[in-house]
Image 1: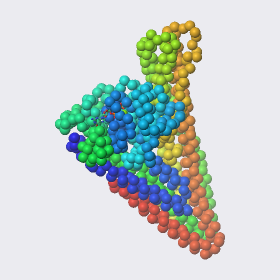
Image 2: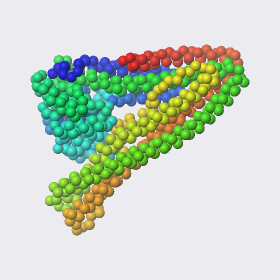
Image 3: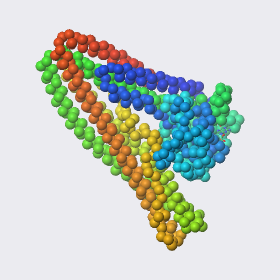
Image 4: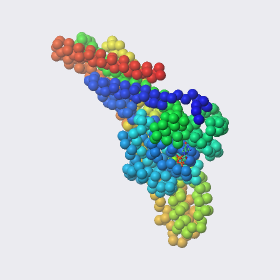
Length: 599
Ligand SMILES: Nc1nc2c(ncn2[C@@H]2O[C@H](COP(=O)(O)OP(=O)(O)OP(=O)(O)O)[C@@H](O)[C@H]2O)c(=O)[nH]1
Ligand SMILES: [Mg+2]
């Protein structure tokens, strides 16, 4: 199984990542040097540093049960960390992320977190060790020192869909919306099925990018493999409405190759070739965007610092009465900007409220409408197959059924809605940030013209801090919601028949759907409100910092002047040295920017 089927496979596994690391380190170096310059305010640089350091690429591995998803993750990491088996196994999502040592944390649905030993992993993430998730695990996070994860790549193993365990399928769905790419795994020993295609339809809807892999290629001869690929390719072409690439791999050979240090096995597994293409995609689609926008934002900060420096220089030499007039003009402009600032505030409030009403509320109502008949149908079937139970047992079983179904369905909806709201919120913030930047630029331009100083405005895409953007919070926190608990049993009269229980359970189902919907709505609305407040604070800070920066620069100049000619000369010299440093940093950043542009 070699190349030649779909693409010319380049053997440059780490080239993309290395280049990204180099550019990233270049930017971090610039940030450090900028922080050492007194004229530059630290905070925006620190935020940008955080942005680079916490950048994450989420890769979700999905597919039918037993296609080799977990094996693929082990192979990518080159270690036998996650349990694999011949029966449907993975039941909980596991997130692999970079860390100095192998450490495993289990997050439970009630918010508890426990660190466990690697040997015990099976007891939590597999259907066998944790049947129907009786241990109430929400997800597992494994840190591991693999170079593959070093640049912020996170690999997410999901349970296989389509097995007899419906709850496993639901878990897989929760991880799609925020993935940067989904790795959709097929296998040569199972021709593509209807269920696989149905699943693909959803993956297509929720995932930003899909890579198709056909695993266990080691089972087949080269000609059989080609036939298998051609078959899947045709089926996929129809499903996707376009030609797709399929990468044949063998997770088994790849892992063996890594463990034995055999390049030959690795080569045969075809995994290095695939991961090279995957890396290239990640770097180009996401890495470059990040590098460019951080570089531009830093250039903005530099350009503003340069202007402030020139303003100080000018106010060292401008005749006093002329300077006073200029300060008055600046004060007037400042008042104008302050009014604009208030308008922003009101508009932002309005937009976020609209998002809650016509985004969140409508989505929730729509979801509930579809959910009721769906759970009702399941409940009917469940009731019919459990009628033989004693009343008490029946009651408990129905109760548990409702709770579980409602909880799971909402979990899936929550993940999708979270992504939808975050994107909408991000769009609002971006729009506002652009306008704030324009206002800030106008103020800087005004000052530069007032003092006849050249000034370069730099357009930079809005990057607000990771802290405030809930968009980037991908399951970093345990689920903050209280989970549903059962309460039906309490309300039952003593003499009661099957039918009455069934009637009551239906009422109960509606209540539970309402309660859980209400909780999620509250959580979303509160998070949106918090995010809005943080964003607003940051946005207003930006304007105020600009006003203050200009004001302080002029003031400094005037104060130095009052001290006499020698002071003025010394200050002039210091400032021109700083100007040199600023220019040197500007050149370095422009270099980084060109490196990305001319990739
Ligand atoms: N021959 C061969 N077997 C493989 C390969 N990859 C995985 N397997 C086997 O396929 C079986 C399933 O592998 P898993 O990695 O557990 O599959 P999965 O997709 O994670 O399964 P679920 O978690 O149940 O959905 C195991 O017996 C693996 O050893 C491969 O490349 N070649
Ligand atoms: Mg698995």
